[in-house]
Length: 371
Image (cartoon, rainbow, N blue to C red):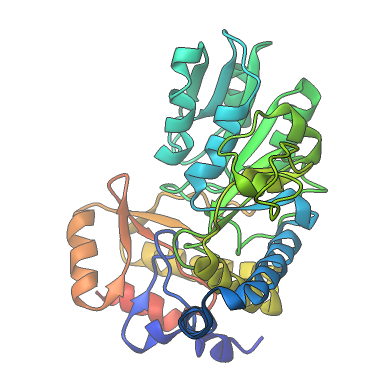
């Protein structure tokens, strides 16, 4: 793989060693061009260009389906991960006394929608990590006959721990538990096939590893669950005849399209599509291998300079996120010093978090260590 050609698509490299893709990624040139083209077309044509943009939405939906191994109709666009989680949290057929199991260290977006269910008699069971890992046995121990949902991140945002989605999905399928995945920290890095991995629902905004703008992401609901979830956010485009505005015919689409009630973020989806085209042209497996190569290099060099690597680096648990600790250097000072040196890393859980993408180089890693 010619990674220099891939790197040339990222204008950010001219000014920064950007190592913070677990936060908000810089846009690649094709996404910038797509946003510009949309803006120019809207300015020049207004609504007369709507057919072109609807075809673009269908194309991007197909790309997103290809990314996760789904059928296009089972993919819907979300404005953020929270919205995708809320589709399930608000629409699930709860009974008072049901419970949700999740990791205590989950990002707030994967906690608050579930905690918001307390008035409906739903308990949230937050399972603490064991150091840098979430033990499957601990999740199982938290489950009982009233566990309705297990919700985990594919990769935990602070530690970088990669959950075993295949194993968790099989457990949930055996017990009749809805398995939801916040996939924002893995889509674009790790291959996923929802036909093979028994995931019932997932959501991910596109502004991290998918290299898209904020406000345009994807959701997925397994078809068997569509009629069991009470639809959330129903609107004009949730029904089978969305363009017949003068006829009220309340028949919902028989697939995930029913969750797209109103106007979509067309510029965001357009740009996300350009980034998906770029990633898929390289291949997600190649992206994964490159990122793990860079993070392995980072861990080796960081340890030699006195850092402790908090993140698990076992083959089946490591990810694109590396969480670091130093015995004498305060993490907030490290982040500030790096920014002054035009190196972008972040602070999470009082640790330095480094998250390179495939266009980064070992020179970028060295710049971080030098700073």
